[in-house]
Each structure stands twice: as structure tokens, then as C-alpha cells.
Length: 439
Image 1 (spheres, rainbow, N blue to C red):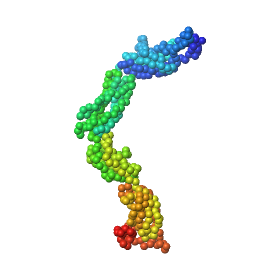
Image 2: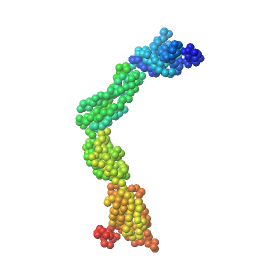
Image 3: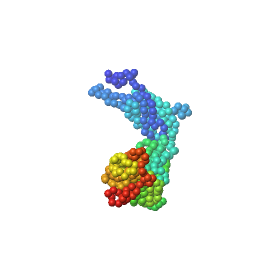
Image 4: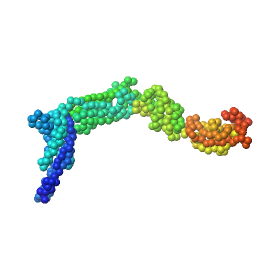
């Protein structure tokens, strides 16, 4: 029974070793290359101790050789290079090292297992000889010529690619007229040919109006070759917002707002209200005018950003909700108007105006934030009662209908032509408002 176990329960039960892939399949010969052999049937052997009846796994006994493909040596002996430090990792994986100095050319891979079985993978590896191509290096960000503000967190992303080679190093350095920043050595995966390196630096204050931050990157490959790239970004001081006018606007957005300050770079400065970007209307180095975005009622923090450097105004911008008329009582009046009505709605203030068909409510009185009373002007047919505010604006589509009643004979009544835009003096005999004591 022990002999059967050692033989794998019969020759017919043995799974033949099959090599499917060598990785890497291409490489330069300047340095040894960590390699992986993928396949099937990489079965270890077992040693049996008949005394105590114990067994232990034997993962040794594997060999792997790279042999020059047929015809590579013009009929002479085919050069063979054993993989070094070959190790069993699993039933489908062997690990090892392709030695350095393998002459340029194509090589077959032959793997032998402890039982003497072999598997051939033709043209498994191509040696490119000595690496004569330096790694490529490029910046993903920032863009060359970009404007960056002092104090901003500047993200720098560099990529390097050594093709079939291996990267040995990637360093990013920084310099300005006022001096340099500490360099950054990018972490690399051992044996990797590609790398993407990201680092964030705090933008320094410019020494003068022409100062630039020069960012350079240098990559070195396994063959000792190097390649460099650089970008230069314009340094500007951080913006300093001072004031805002007006200090309030509509929750609907669209309020024209001007922020005054210094170091506001035209075409490079943006404004946000609680993080929501505003549309820039006009800009100078000392003032920027924007259309405020929509926002819920209340205070909003206004920030100004130039080249990634952001500063906030000390005072907030206040968003006001537009008033809305929802009900009117009574809901009708004679065509001659002058009937006292109560308009019920939301967000009423002392600056709220009420119109009936576009004509102002006469002698309006603010009762509370939900009620305004006044006299309807003369009119005809059905008109819409709406509310508006000079700052908060008017809610589109909001309003409540009001009906003007025709006389019993069906005539239009006695509304005069100037009744379309009445004033208090033209409709009340004493020239003032009832109980108001004057105009």
C-alpha cells in the first residue's frame, strides 16, 4: 500500500506535467528576472517513514531549462540556461529566476518533475540582450503652464514605463526662484516595468510676478539608462476676497453678485456658494461678478479659488426664498375694485409686493409672514394674484386667481382707462388709505 501511494496509485493515475506559460516571456539580460511557470501536474513527491508510519512532502526535484530554439546555433550545440532558485509553489505554479547574461534570441522551456516527466514549451522566452532603450517618463498632472495659487495642495502624477526592462528608480524634484522643495522618491514594485507615482505638495508663495514652480521627474531603468521630463506652472498669490454686494439674493439663483478683493486672476478665478460653482459674468484683478447658483434659504459661505488656492469671505451670503401667494379671501370683487382682501401665502416681509393682474394691491398691510391685507384695484375678468420681492424675486408659476364680477347687465362696468395702473389718490376720495390718515 505504501508503494502504491508513492507511485500515485498506479502509473495510470499519474497526471503528466504540462507547461503552459513562462512569465515574463520577453526581457533584457542586464539583470536576473523573477519568473513564474504556469501549468498543470506540478505534483510533489512524498517520503514515507515505515517505522512510525509518517509521511512528509518533498517539493524538490524540479528543474527548468531555457534552451536556444532549434537552428539558433547553426547546427552546433544548443545553449542551455537553467532557471535559478526553482521552487514548487502549487499544483499549477513553479517560481524561479531567469539568470542574467542570456544571449539575445528565442528559447524553449523544458520542465522536468521529480518522477522524470518532462514538458516542452516552444519559444517560451525571448532575450532582447542588453537594454539600450531608456524608460519613458511623463506627467499626467499638472499641465505645463497651469496657474497654481500659493498654499494650494497640488497633486503631481508621474508615469514611467521601461517596456520589457525593469524600473530601478523614479524621483520627482521641485524648484522655484525662491528655492526648492524636498524631492520625492516614488515607491516601486520590485521588478516592475511600469509605475504611476502620485505626490501632493503645498504650493509655495511666489518670489515675484514671474516666479514658476518647475517640477522634474527622472526615471532609471535596469540597464542604467535614465530619462527625464518636466513641467513648469505659474505661481500666483492666494486670492484675498474682501467684500460682497449685494449680500443677499434669491434661492432661485441668478442674482448678480460682485466680490471685491485682491489677486483675483481673470479667467483663472472661480467662485462658489457652499461649494456650488457660480457662473462668472465678469472679472478683473480686484473684482469678480458672478450669477449666484440656486440654494436653500439661509446663509451660504462664499469662497474664491485661484489655481487651487481657496479663501472664504468673512461674512456669509444670505439666500431668501421668494414669497408665494396661495389663497385670497374674498376671491372676487366688482370690476370697480376697492374691496378689502386678505392674501395668504409664505415668506411675506415688509418688502413683499402683491399684484393683481400685474397691478399693485392698494394700501397693503403686512399682518405677518403669511398674511398681507389690502384693496384690489379695478379690473376685469379673472386675474392672477402674485407675490414678489425685490431681492428674493418671484416664484415662477405661483399665484392664485381672483375674479372680477361683471355688472348684472353684462357690461364691463365703469372702469376707466387709467384704472389699469391705479394709485391711491385716484380711487379713494380722500386721497389716502382707509384708516391710514394719508397717502
